[in-house]
Amino acid sequence: MGLQGSDGSDGRFSRYVKGLASVISHADRVKPLLDYYTGLLMPYERKSVEPMAAVTSPARTAAQHQSLLHFVGQASWSDEKVPAKVCETVLPAIERAGPIEAWIIDDTGFPKKGRHSVGVARQYSGQLGKQGNCQAAVSLSIANRGASLPVR
Image 1 (cartoon, rainbow, N blue to C red):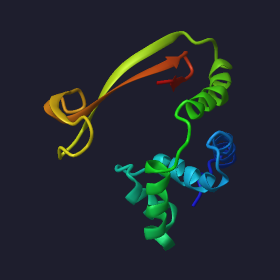
Image 2 (cartoon, one colour):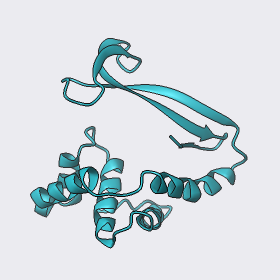
Image 3 (cartoon, one colour):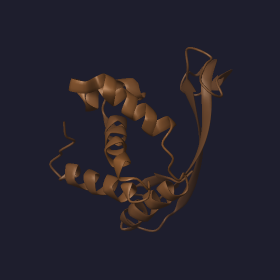
Image 4 (cartoon, rainbow, N blue to C red):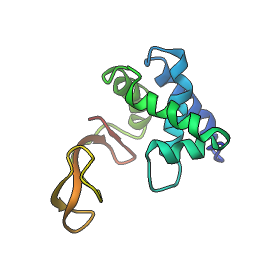
């Protein structure tokens, strides 16, 4: 499975993940990191580890599921160093299109069917266009006319 595009995106993606791997502290986490990011980019609706495992390792889905669960839920890595590395890597590319012009603060509602996810409550969701069960998240991004980068 690859993410190859006509612009060499497969190679750029691999270099990007290797850069992130440099701050997650253990070599044995590089493959799950690559698989997790690959899963996030795949064109399917659910971004949980079960469908990611089926797509990233169809021949050994159960083992891949366990590996991704461990990576996401148990493996320790710095939640300060990883976003800092993302900014260090991506910000220069964004600024080649011009200086940062705006900070964007946005709230997003994620519709949920059940009540078991953290923060689920009956509240207004723009995605639903009404009140319903959802999680709400607030993000901060920086942007110019060419691109944006979520920073928190």
